[in-house]
Amino acid sequence: MTEPATADLLAAVRPGGKPVPEGGEAGGELGGSVLRLFARTFVENRLAVAGTTLIVIMAGFCFLGPVFYHSDTLNTRLLDTNMPPGNGWPLGTDDSGRDILGRLMLGGQSSLEVGLSVALLASTFGAVWGAIAGYAGGIVDALMMRFVDGMLAVPGLFFFLFLASVIRPTLLLIIFVLSIFSWLVPARLSRGETLSLRTREYVQAVKVMGGSRRRVVFRHILPNAIGTLIVNATFQVADAILALALLSYLGFGLSPPAATWGGMLSAGITYVYDGYWWQVYPAGILIVLTVVAFNFIGDALRDASEVRLQHR
Image 1 (cartoon, rainbow, N blue to C red):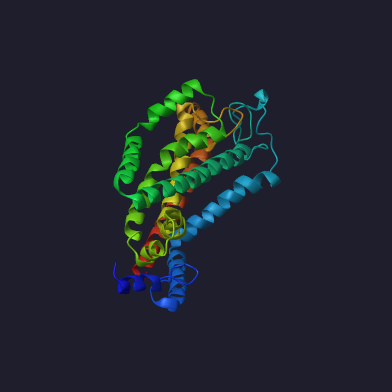
Image 2 (image 1 turned 60 degrees about the horizontal axis):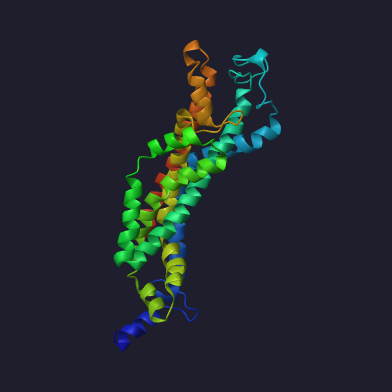
């Protein structure tokens, strides 16, 4: 590398070793304007605002609702089984006499906890895996990504069926199992972003100054790829909630008296032909609304991210 080229790279780094955005010191103002444009693009999306509002309402319903609405959601009451809405039961009771409204709140807590936890774990691990693979390149990249491709080829449905037959599921186990199959897409996204970012001048400057690979990956590449990963994480929350509902049908959901929306939906299907609609529709509607809301947010974040990249 010639001395002028080295000087150009070093000029891209502040004395503290942090990269200066394009445009020199004015890059800070440019970065602020891009963030404002990102926020304005998101807020102007009515579906995104509706989705965010719906998620806030749903979280309040699930986590604050039990503070104001007290009901017995765990114990079986045989005299009150399959009661229709009314007479002290706003949404009726299930086949064990438990209040459905209270169980919707309890089940929402489990569903949201699983969705958010899986998205966080999968996105974090996948981002690090993909960034390391993309930055290392060569044989390391090939081996790490072939492992990802191999995992993508594993039919998760059969794996879940096997676990359902040998292990009693818990909330932590369900989160762990779903995360195993959810980090693969973030890993591929992170690798793609890394392949683009590793050629940037500020990354080359850090390498010239003797910065370690760990510093390059965790201080410069991952922070600049976070936008794409956050967009994907919102979709993963919705996917995890749907997957939890599917696992309940397969017998790998939480065991009663614990509640999830998917478990309530699965149990209520048995009685839908008897006219007990209140055991099916409320849980199904909440699942659909939550999944659609997170998808609205994900779509808006993706659109806003594209606007940000155009002004980078």
